[in-house]
Length: 449
Image (tube, rainbow, N blue to C red; front, side, top):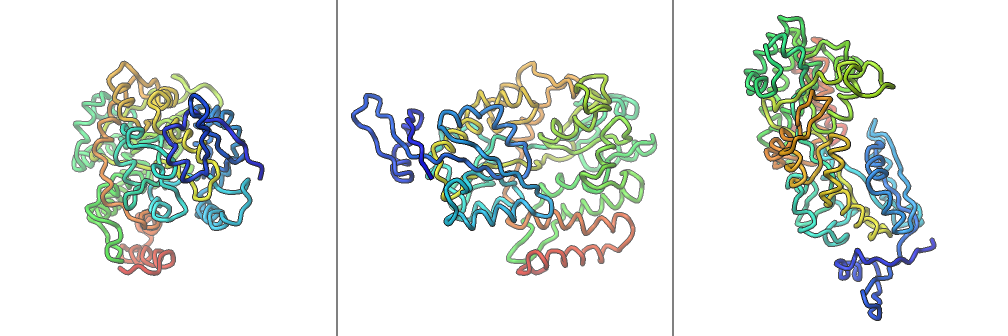
């Protein structure tokens, strides 16, 4: 493949990295000591949806022009594990692929981060890419912990994803006598309080939650130990509490018996819904809940369209996080200079991250920028004028990643699938648990229980 030779003054702090890793030759005769670097002409970025593509195009597309490269997004759905399967195949062929076909960047989620973080398919963003501790000093520590292994940092992210409880203001006023987030929080501060309000909602003709999976992440992110310990699957007391509560809610009619992402679950969030609230992290509020709240998705998202403006958020009974996307650089990439500048722009540059939040209402991975917005007069029309960033800023400080493990994705997905029939009343608890273990045996036969 033909290489492009470019001048990069922005990478002068990376001289030692690039000399070692990119075959850089310095031009010591020039006054500013700029560097000539061979850089590939195509940057291939693997994703499972178009979220990162949108962020890139709005906030970082100019970097491609600076480097003289074409950016190609390879978007593969995550359904039936298709994204990971195709990514793994591409990474396995990395050494044999022509330069234009090599994977340069790929996205990962927290639930399966360990698979790529502990592998040599991903580069160290400090040693190999050149981001410094100072560059990333304002990032939330948990976002680094998820992608760290043996002293290496194998990814970085523009997002932080603390979770809150989003509720309908109109229903809160009718049933609880107030829609004020501070007052509503007082009524939902513990799981016992939450259960009491669920009973009140039922008596008033509303569901507390939409379905079986809505509260799951609030429990799974507060476990006391890892899913797998010494090769054995362990059902944590917090997971057991989710099972018990969800069965109770299903039998008492406190939920609408939906499953996550199902059509009825989406309807429940809109003007025809009869559900009090939903557990959502940062991305869910602006990317999912807002859209589902509209009566006309083709009309502007504003007051008067469906129940836009009728939601508010509070912390709920427990702090938690849900989701997030990390950017990883693939071993074998020939576009390290581009990757450095992209990662710096989107995950280290405070002004950019602040603007992403102001534009999208998403919560970004820069504590300084987020606390600035939290302390300002910023407000969300969708949330009835509430500054939800202030609540997210407090919730983010409480996130604990000490109990994540490499099997989280499989365990989290399969425990929910196995227990849906139990919540429906079609099988017994023991049958559901046996189904869970059988599902895990197929996916991870090395595990015991």
